[in-house]
Amino acid sequence: MLADEGTTIIKFFLHISKDEQKARLEARLSHPEKNWKFDHNDLSERQHWDDYMRAYEDAIEKCSTKHAPWYIVPANHKWFRNWVLSETIVKTMEELKMKFPEPPDGLDKVTVK
Image (cartoon, rainbow, N blue to C red):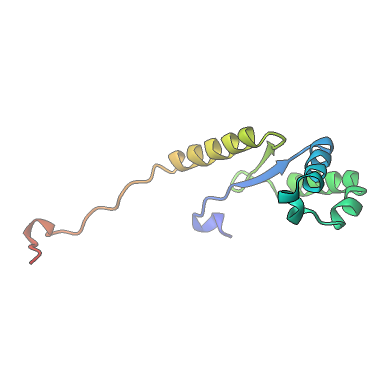
């Protein structure tokens, strides 16, 4: 419905590998400044990795359309993830060919006092 009304939709799936997720969880435990990010539920949820991957693949396959595509972004390296996101957003915005609206008539006769 949003696309039908002219809204541009871009969806990103930030994918990290299981090994990268493990490293990030370990970093949360070993660095006191990251302890606040740790959640014990992450450990039990990790056991369902393959199920989550199948569910993500299914959702992306069924929900990616020409008017609302999914972009699967490799996110193991944050610099690369950020580059892909920004490039995709900029490209999408450039394709909109946005411009300022025409000014109202008579502005040449307006004086601000």
